[in-house]
Length: 470
Ligand code: ADQ
Image (tube, rainbow, N blue to C red; front, side, top):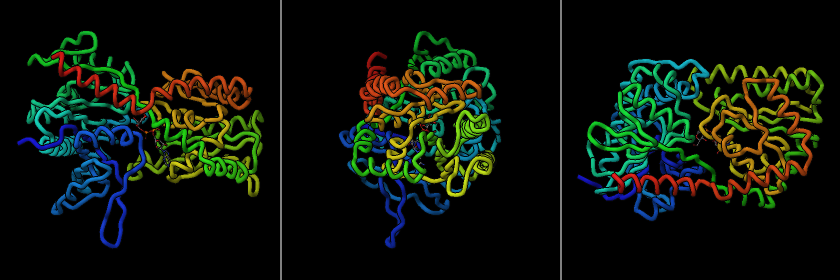
């Protein structure tokens, strides 16, 4: 039986943080571009967002009831600690995540992880089948839920289903490693439209339907044996430009950014990195580069300081624990060699921050370093540009981040080529303000119109069209 929502978003996480009060847990909307872009669409269509609350529950407990927040109906899907371990930390983040990021860390495959991934995907699909109205539009998000489109179509062929992958989609040679590659592809092919960050992702996907399933992709689509057509395309995600720009113009944020500079000892240059503590982000190499430049005396501390914010992430996974050890060892080494009493060369912050503090940090940074080894898009690069309402600051950006396709005026670099990154960083540190302003203005102009609202609209328009032409 169909439900009553004509628009449904399905994502691993609900856009909320749990707050514990004496009366029990309540939820507060979490910051994030995706919810900013989708909330108006959900509110307008009596829409529902299906996802996990972020707190594991025992099997015998029921999931919290659905609740309303800012005009959106939120429908929790329960996850037990062992499901969390196998579906999320296991198959999603120890098999798929490294594999889809060029295997920069060795992917691990375990059969019981796959079983749990399938079971949890089925639970999300069942929940969606229950709440979606007849002929509703459903938008499934990201690599944790790649089987949901086909599972959902099986129960509800009336639905229009879109899928968007936030991370890169690997080429044939890499994807072929995946033990359950055919099932994953068939899962995605349940959608009418499969969206990627870059055209290469769509291309890889279509090629794989040929190599693994023997289908015949043509142009941007592929026809299935049952006559249905699946379209693949690039929809580069973006940020809520207005939100970041407004924050950066706020007098309190401006004052805070000045305070940050003075707390850092009023250096000539502040170099900033803001990343989840993830091995795809290239944090270790970035620190090494900074150390080498100090050793070579091309930079001197504390005239130039580095601030590295590394948000705690996936802390129960071994590869993340060992990354933390390596990063912290390197920070210690740099400060041991180049710091002075009360004057660190690298300020390392393994913490989460509010949007306001992030905006102040962006404004305080002369050079922003975004140097992932592979990244679907990278929103930090875009947020930095949005925050530079003063047209100052320089961005050093990896060619391997999706954002590099749009932010062409950044100092683009290959993060594997340490000498090349050093050159880019030196150019950014010594940039002439007129050149910096010219680059920043162009990038800002682009992002002003290519924001997350435009992203959601372009995906949903394309999804709508796929249904009509079929
Ligand atoms: P992530 O890998 O998480 O996202 P990113 O795109 O940079 O990477 O987004 C991180 C977000 O977290 C940014 O909005 C940033 O402001 C915020 N953040 C980072 N550090 C923080 C801190 N210490 N405190 C508070 N907030 C912090 C995945 C993909 C990316 C893709 C996005 C969206 O890996 O490639 O761009 O999804 O599709």
